[in-house]
Length: 430
Image (cartoon, rainbow, N blue to C red):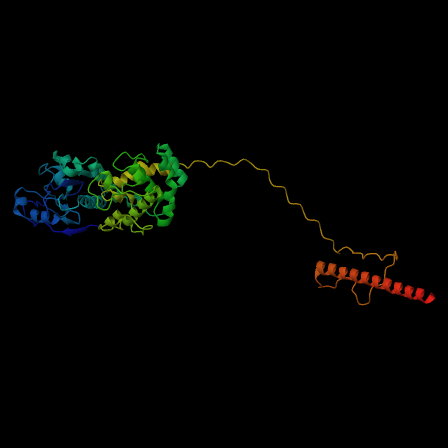
């Protein structure tokens, strides 16, 4: 917020007439004094001197790039509109003079004037249509700087409007409000060059790393590169998606603009450059111009796209154009429908595994040769069945197998014994 200093013209001077003022309009002037040092303080001294009193000339505020000085109470008129002692400009409007001294920053002076104008409109319940040029009252070419710059007056009014509606400004930092597919569809509809469409996912990648809104930077790139067709000093091979200049730029030739090694590096440079504006950390090592931005008094303080005017580019309505001519259109596009997959047959239900029997099957032992049907009695103490808690199915099967082996060995032993008895008998008969 600019600083307002009250330094009133003394009462009784010819250029402080004292007629009652009920503000109905705000009248905008340029000082028409480009001399070095002709700032707000210099004009305050002028208004309290004899030269201004002799004309007489007076207005309510002088605005430069750093402060605002008030010269008259807001319930008294001044002599600034050139329409006579009874004219509506002089008798019903508050006069604001914008400095144009060569050693000042004109863009900042206009920004401060827009802020002051919006404040006065709110204070006196006026609307934007009640902001007038000096030219409106007397036909004088004033405010000459705004009038002679293409779109100057309309961009000033737009800046006032944005000050009146701060909630309507467009944040640069935040979550994406559009998808990659939506942005690419918008670019295709605007006849974008193929590589501009293809680079879109990289914008969403770096947005995730920085916190900047990808659709904002993509829209800015569309403005800077004519949707990837270029056509100005920047060449496509420079992979410069945002018109970023080199650290020591001397003009507006191709050599004055940064060259990035790959299209992806160009997107990284775009994000890093804007990080310097909003106060976020860059991704990797930034380019040279990044450091130039950090040296500006407003570095790290930019919050809205509309504030890029006069900073990223000379035009005061640069940021307004990004939103109005590009971003709004992108956000209005519906993303392309996702193609439907052909219907597939549902998978067959899995077959149920066979139920296990409550008891494992009996495993018969091998029959003893020569002794068909003979089933020996079980050995005392050998369990017929597994005891509770004995290991379940596996334990049960193991027990039965051991029993079979035991029975088999018992039969073999019996046969061997019978064979030995028979052999002794035969030997005795000999």
